[in-house]
Length: 117
Image (cartoon, rainbow, N blue to C red; front, side):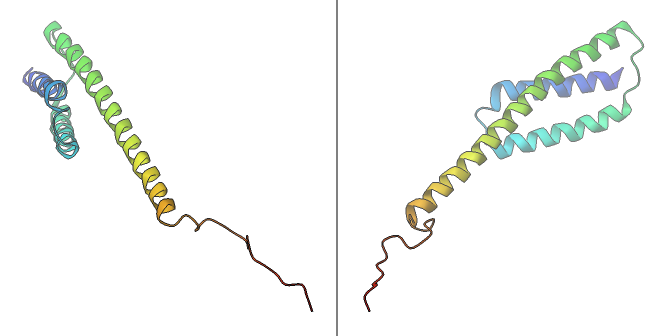
């Protein structure tokens, strides 16, 4: 089936990109490539029919294995992004405390009240 062959080729190219170029590329480029992959895959998945031959079944199993590896990479990348955002927020909070260290204090510490009449 030609659609399964194209889908397999698409998954292979994405897997090669993940293994070779994803570490070197900037995050925006990787995200753009993943979005492009999902768009192309959605078009091909709409055209897929159930496998009829053993060769088609093997190709489907291969696609599923590739998909699992790609999904793991996307989950790891998402976790890295969340971690980076959390670190950025923490640094921002620490920087704010460094610039204005007394902004969090409440009360009248050190105030002198004269009780004489």
